[in-house]
Length: 104
Image 1 (tube, one colour):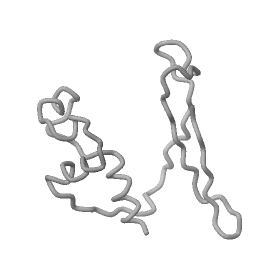
Image 2 (tube, one colour):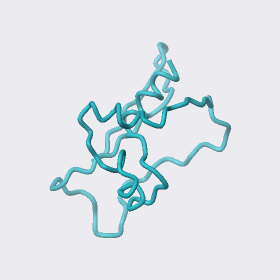
Image 3 (cartoon, helix red, strand yellow):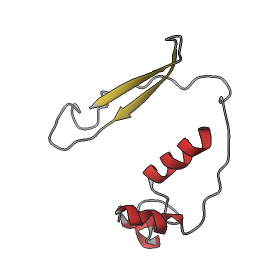
Image 4 (cartoon, one colour):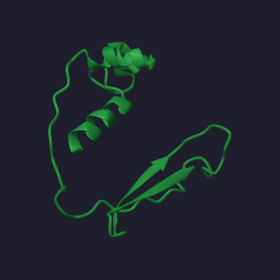
């Protein structure tokens, strides 16, 4: 399932499209094994509108676990290695919050 949200300025001009893809077990619509039905727009061939670095702390994922996301990929080094990472990674929703704070 895919959902597009159009972001427009106060003049009604399209500024960006936020595309969300959901994988919901049992809903279907994914084609046959090995095929991809969703076509994403190409990445623009221009510089980014904004680049900004935000520092996170090594224990930030542990604090974020207080939101009840207990996926061991974010805390257990062995699970992170099984997922192909050198160390536990920060939660995607935490990164989304950091990004939202960064661009305001």
